[in-house]
Image 1 (cartoon, one colour):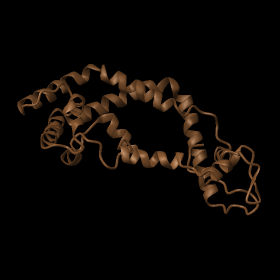
Image 2 (cartoon, helix red, strand yellow):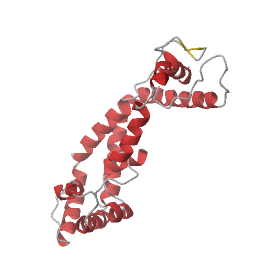
Image 3 (tube, rainbow, N blue to C red):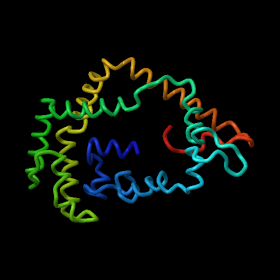
Image 4 (cartoon, rainbow, N blue to C red):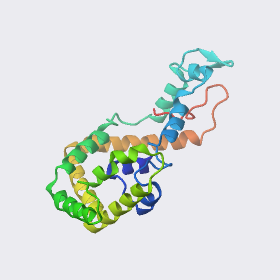
Length: 223
């Protein structure tokens, strides 16, 4: 999932991926429809009896008491015990702002010009790596065509010559740090929250569930 997010952010930057998939979504990506369907099914296809226990829709099941609001709520409370309140969506919002700021940064302009010139010498007219990857021609094929693979390979070579990725990463990181500054306290709380939750997860996994109460910490959904 982390690799999928990075691929979405920076596009196709790996020569091996370009030579194998072109601009198509790799088989390992969470953006691949088949992978997405599998992940969605894990959270949607819940048997009715399990759903009742998870969300506290029944007071008891199999002779065992179901906790108030269900096992999912009990597990979430246990895993979040002692953790401070924090905005878990803050990093994503800051990341979006950093992307927007990076796109307007003048330091990328000479890099993009160098990349475009390199592509033109090879006979490909695109304004940017993003424009190349989003060419409508690639959407008509389930598997990459020879033309697509050639363009993608040239794209990566030109990115390397223009130092596109190192520049993009450096500029993006600088904008991220600038945006993080005013939110240091909030981000510190979020880090504390994640560390405490991780400790609680470790504790829950190392404790055998009681026979008289529902098992805790076994649901893989978010808390």
